[in-house]
Image (cartoon, rainbow, N blue to C red; front, side, top):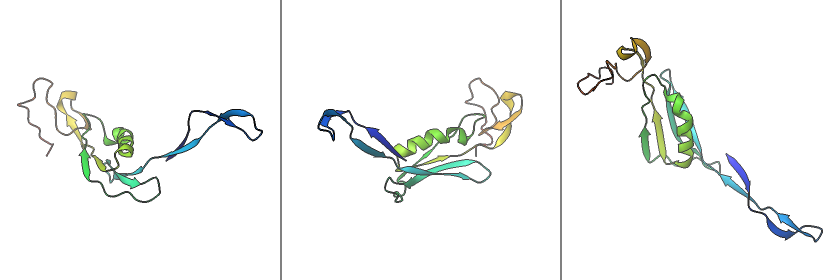
Amino acid sequence: LKLLSRTMPTMARNGCGAAGPAFQRREMSFAQPQVSVAGDSKNVVITPGMGSDGMPLPPATSVCFFLHGLGDTASSFAGMFHQLAIRMPHVKFVLPTAKNMNVTVNQGAEMPSWYDLQGLSARTAEPCTGIE
């Protein structure tokens, strides 16, 4: 992705000898991360892609795992993490999507969930069956 921007105008002589505003062009380049959706599970993986020179970037030196909330999916957050990856090309972002299951707290509705939520009160004693 390449963007062109203009700097503040300066007074300069144009081709006719008269003073007028002149714009300097500068090029801003950003790395383009590689985005992949893995299989039927809809897991999103964002890895370093190509640099502004078109050459592959070095492999990631760190990994960030992001788990979405109840009823959501990884693809809902892919755009946000793609923007982060542009600014942080040394990080590999892994966004898994939970499997669909019946969720007790939502009257048994089927939705992406890491485990079956049984209530909204203090869940410290609640089993987290399914997150294994």
